[in-house]
Length: 120
Image 1 (spheres, rainbow, N blue to C red):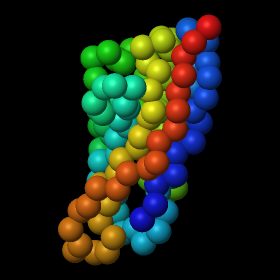
Image 2 (image 1 turned 135 degrees about the vertical axis):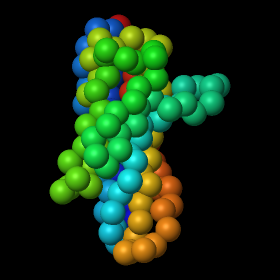
Image 3 (image 1 turned 30 degrees about the horizontal axis):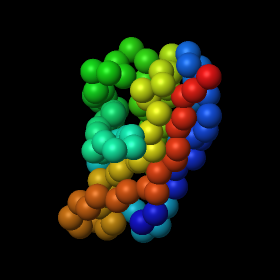
Image 4 (image 1 turned 180 degrees about the horizontal axis):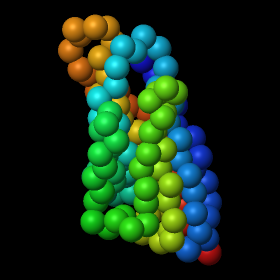
C-alpha cells in the first residue's frame, strides 16, 4: 500500500491550500484517514481525522480553518486549509488505517509528506 500526498507549497498568510492523499495498492477497506504535521524541531502532531463513515475530528488550533474530507471510491483524503498562518508551516503527512484483504488486520500506512510554507 502506498500513500501519495500532494498539494503543498508556498502561500501568504491568510491564503488557502488543498492537500490530497491517494492510497493505492492491495486495499480491501480503509478505516480512519488522518492528516498529521511536523514543524522543524517539533514532534509530529495530529491535525485532523475522518472515519470511513465521514465523522471528523480536529485539533483545536485548526478548528474553523481546516476541513478534512474523503472520497472512498478513490481511496483519497483531502485537507482544505483556509486562513493559513505562519505557524501552520510544516511538513504534512497523511495516514490511513488499511485492511488489505477481507478479514485482514488493520495496519497504519504513511505518506511521504508534503511541505506547506506560510510566509509573506
